[in-house]
Length: 122
Image (tube, rainbow, N blue to C red; front, side, top):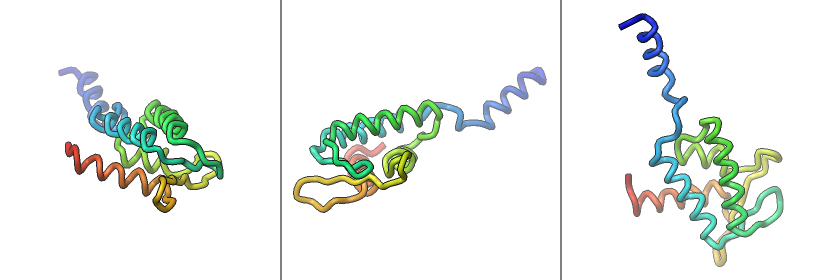
């Protein structure tokens, strides 16, 4: 094997984070975002409440931004980097579901993720 091939192989193996998120993780994140959109809950962002579908659209845009930069390889990274607070104001997102107390979006998303994994383990 040539030196060039060895160096190239070493570089590829040294930087696994450069790869796209695993399809299982990407699918899990997509299901998580879609579950918020289908929840019927309201989503507070920067002091204003929005319907679940608007929240889904917003989080999907944030996820696409993270994916382009390879910054959300897991659902946990997605929640931490896109689903917890406004990147503009730093204010925490909140979720309000009928008949339930208002919770942070991070709490709602983590609970939903745990429920999804419980019913559909990898």
